[in-house]
Length: 92
Image (cartoon, rainbow, N blue to C red; front, side, top):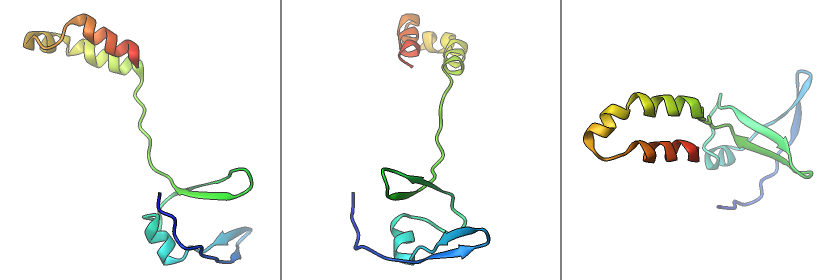
């Protein structure tokens, strides 16, 4: 983790909320651009602002359906057996 020089800024009123202007160097270091979404949380006192990155989750049932629907093709190659696929699904 790279730690950059401490930067200070001011909190300003923005409508009914408060706004924080990020210096360009901070935004660049965090790889943020105008319009990007961020997560804001308070963690044991300090405010933490971090880029909101999409997360991808696979449903076990969808994975199992996919594996079972492709089982014939997989077995025809002789690379995998049914038990190996079932074990992979059980590990999810």
